[in-house]
Amino acid sequence: MFGIGFPEMIIILIVALVVVGPDKLPDLARSLAKGVNELRGAMNQIKESLNEETKVISSVKEDLRKTAGQMKDDLLKDNIGGPRRMPSEDTLIEMEADLAEAAGPRPWEQDDHQETTKEAIVDSASAPAEEENVAPAEERIMGKNPAAPVV
Image (cartoon, rainbow, N blue to C red):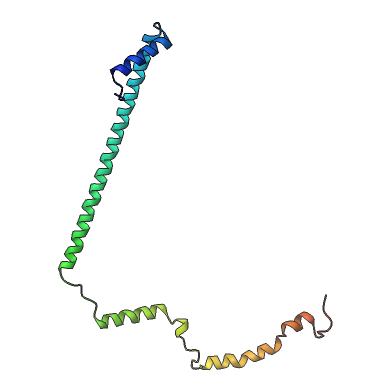
């Protein structure tokens, strides 16, 4: 059982007889047997639950293997048909044009020296007139006389 032979069992029984006494030894043996039986039952229950979980895990593992095999077969079937054709240059140019149109101009690609339009000229002509009415920040804070600070 636990690597205990017959001579060791006899020594354990003699020690138990001396420690417990002949009157309580049968009760001790019964309670010990009950404890061992309950322990065996609990161990069997744990084994069963572990076996059930192992079955579930193995079924999931098998499903994953099947799926991986199917994916591998699908990939191999696609490659057997020959190399995939690349889109033609015309198609690529059209796709690039569509993307560029959708994205709009990039800031680093814009020309800083663009042609001025009539609206830009009119806006720039009216801008200095507006700026003349606006005083610099120091004048607004300090007033007309910068030597006299406003408290």
